[in-house]
Image 1 (cartoon, helix red, strand yellow):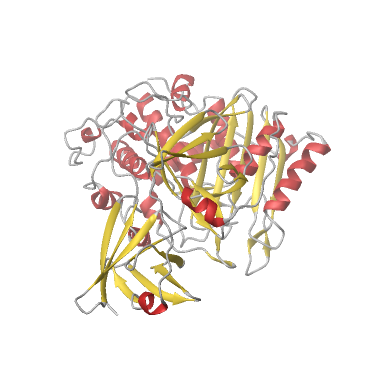
Image 2 (cartoon, helix red, strand yellow):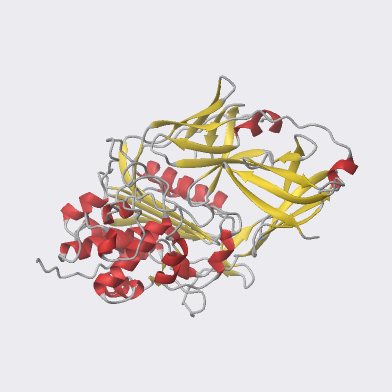
Length: 542
């Protein structure tokens, strides 16, 4: 086994050189517009050919204490953590302690695979087919508030139904990376956090990176926010549920140290790095645009490896263009501060391939709400389209919502200006969506049912008002507000309901409907809510 001596990578602001005043001004403009001085902020770093050419902070790190953002602020990096898990696995493979083709039951013996061969590679590439999300049921989001050790957390989700056979589809999946963190602990004999600290953070001098923790005192921690009508402190979630998948903290400068270490093969060989940076394939030969812990993409013909992260209170993004040796990272301390559109535009500017801005028009909600729903692509990956404030939003697997600006009633461009989406009705039975993004044109479809709002008297609708219990932790409250029924789930915002029949009401904001159940006297006693083809029942409790 080849022994590597890890060299401390030192990044100094003395290496900062001007990339041209016009370049700096363009980036300043993008970031100042996105992160105003009085709101939650962001830190941004741009590097080219091993030199930092831009490194600034915007907005506030703490709104309550009026603390401005600084460039060395520490953020929860959410799903960017996956690349550290992937490289940890590759390090153990190079040490001869693991194999990509190992069945996961070699390490987690009691994991119920249903007789299927699920390999470490399947977990790394999100092609395992294991249960994909803890938010499949409407009340499951509350489970994130509970603390788990990794084996207990695996016990929570391991018996959920498998969604496809391993290798047959791509479905972004946090659980796969939680299983990988457990394998790292079993093979190394230490905790996941200690492994990453001792084998990556300490040797590379990433002194501001660590396993995330909400109770420890962490110097220069940026506090997280969410925005509804106004900014609020981020919702509490236990960080134990995302170990290996989204549980690390870092700074943009530390992440650049990480990038340099990988580019210079200080942690893993070039052969292993190529595996992480390669588009892997399904059994049928289709590419999935994902490597090990990185999405594989392009910007105007220039290949990229990249990943975003999103959790309550934080949004992060990091892009690397190997051909041009350009690295861009932006971290924001608000769920509202999605940096991906800006980081992509900055990367395009840095390689002198800027994007053109499309012309957009106003639309009527009645003309566009029919596009709301869940769309499934050929590789079985999915995207949701929702309606908020009379506008459509494209929802990424991590929950990030990107506004869709209308070019016309069925043709939209994402807020980042780099992805165009076109909807089509097919024989009044299917909705097809064509997504032209930076790397390809993909099509997806969803079942389509024409829904027409009817008029009902107030007396008919108000009898459904009340609280309905769907689980021990999740209630759905139906209320009468300003001439409409609304539905509000536990820890959720209210959504308007529209009558389709005397007992069925549908949402325009999500692809779902509610059927109210009446007793012999015509009183509402229960409801059934159907979303994405799955129905949940709840009895009326008051």
